[in-house]
Image (tube, rainbow, N blue to C red; front, side):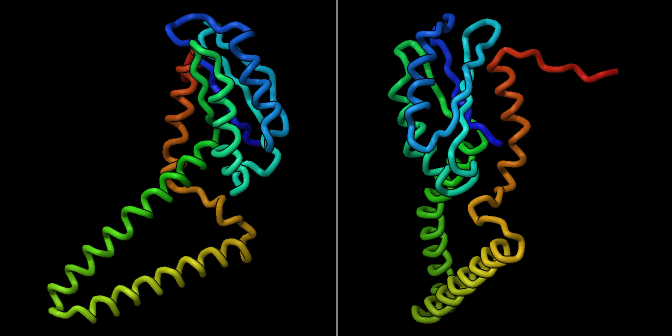
Length: 193
């Protein structure tokens, strides 16, 4: 289980009341793709609350990421009471953010890199046709490698291609948890000894 967490914070340092949380919880309950909504857990100082929701599909599938982007985030944004801020978090939300960032970067970085490499090859080889052949070979090699990797993971290891974890996400997991601990005003555990 990997719940999607909605953090509701009172702006201006005020205290949250049940009337601040209920619209968000109700919106989650009626959102298509959300299976279960747990009761809100309020911090000791009542400035922030966490509402966990379990999605109907497995949490790291493409359909779960789409539900986060297209269903949960808009519903939570509409339901947030004036004077509060509601943000969607959790591992599924983080994966959706990474997926969106990768899609954005692919649209910008790949074409720019291809143009730069083609320009450098054209200058070095003093030809317009040869860089096109070289770039075509690189693109075909990349596509073949990507296809072979996806096939290997899906068929040999039974791992869905959308659940392959980017290394950066694993590296930042501890810092995200530490930040969420500070936000919920929980004391950071001291090491024994």
